[in-house]
Image (cartoon, rainbow, N blue to C red; front, side, top):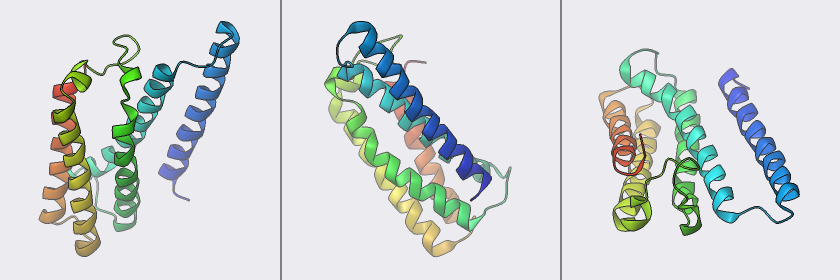
Length: 164
């Protein structure tokens, strides 16, 4: 197992434990079940933490800070493709809580069609990146172009739908 995989796995297990302990404490304190909106926000934060942790090393390849590694790129892109499928379901109506609970702008829900389009573009560009990576197996210009498109998707969504 690679060092980065172990780190990501520890983060995921830690997040799961924190979520379980945090929600267990919440339910004991309130004597009620966890609030679905808060659960969705916590799950969303975990999804985006994992997306960031897997995208940053690829961005370092794009910037020329690290060399392209086919196995690492395959692993990270596969994870990103999976995680991108969780984005849409991470924003149920009940999770429109506002700050300080979430950095998601209310525009996610009031302009849902644009949000859904940006999410779909993210998934489409990740699938294209996965295809380019499968055929190129290098840090080629096609790989960098496909990766840059994914980065632009992230940036565009953050600019439109995330409180800074």
